[in-house]
Each structure stands twice: as C-alpha cells, then as structure tokens.
Image (tube, rainbow, N blue to C red; front, side, top):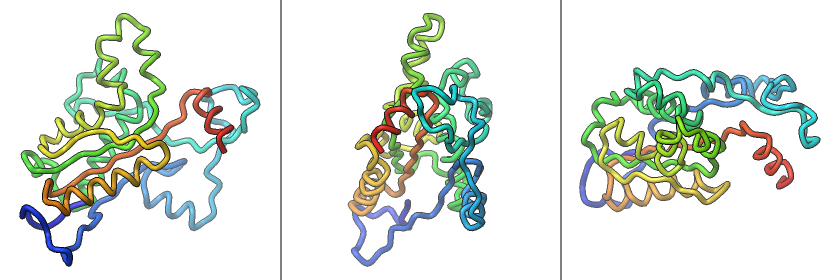
Length: 215
C-alpha cells in the first residue's frame, strides 16, 4: 500500500491503493496460477502430501500443499546459510513474496532503502520454534529465525526501511487488522507506504488437528 507524496497527512479525497501483490497457494506458485486453477475448477487438494501419516488422529487425508517450501536463496537475501537453514518456512516464503510484491508494484526494492515504509506481518503460530530451541547446537539462532515477533523486523532490516515494523496477531483476522493498521498510518502521514505479509503453514499434525476440530 502506498501514497504518492510524503505530507504529514493526506486529504480525504486522495486515494490509498494496493499497488503490488504476490503469494503462493496450494499447487499454485503465484497468483496467476492460482487464478487459472480456480477458474478451471482444478482440485488443489492432495492425499499424497507426505507430511504425516494419513491415519494420524483420524484427520481428513486431503490437504492443500504449497510447493518448494524447503527451497530458499539465502545468498540473495543476505542471510547466512546456517541461519536460513533453521528459519521457519513461513519466514523464508514471506521474504520471497515481499520481494515479488514490491516488483509487482513497479518499484525497485533497492529504492525503498531509507524510506518511511512500514512492514506488518500477520502471523499467529510458529511450529518450529520449540523444535529448534530443544537442539543446543541450534538454539542460539532459533529465536530470530522462528519467533513470529521478529519476522517483520527481519524484512525491514533487509529492505533498509524506517517505518513501523511489528507482527499483528488477532488470530484469523490478523491480515485484515494489518491492512487497517497500514491504511491508518498512511492516512495520518506516519508512513509513506506499508508492506503487509501473512502466511499460514500447517507442517505439524497437532496444528492441523486443532484447526480441523475448530471447523
């Protein structure tokens, strides 16, 4: 989301627009693929996901699975390989799709450095933090890579932006609240642009089990 100038506040008639967007969805590596799959009524669920035994907790066998969550170009994002290895997949994906969304907005990410651009993440769960924290050889790096509170800060630091940077967790409404927060800050002149990033991956059967019984 952005606006064309940097006044302290903007007039009511000025528009605030969503200028770039990116994402990854079940069996759809980008928004265009997702759109085409929906229009063509493609079944995006799968029995053959390999994340846990299909008889686990008698949960539904089918899930929607995103591709390539294990892949990440740590050198491109200037993250040490050892740190990237223990980052939760959601964090790595948000780095990738934040970059794609900025490009989609027609902006060179390098030009954002030093700008009053805020970064808000909308994340609620971290399935990997307890696992990595239990490994003494990995524990010293696990907090930054797996704590949802640090993801927005990590992205802000990489981009070199100076706006507000924090996670918003209101459960299933987190993304909507983040958008409202960004809109209000841009409207008030506290920042010139904002990036909203959200993800939800169910990699552990316990999380999937809880979501299944909440439905």
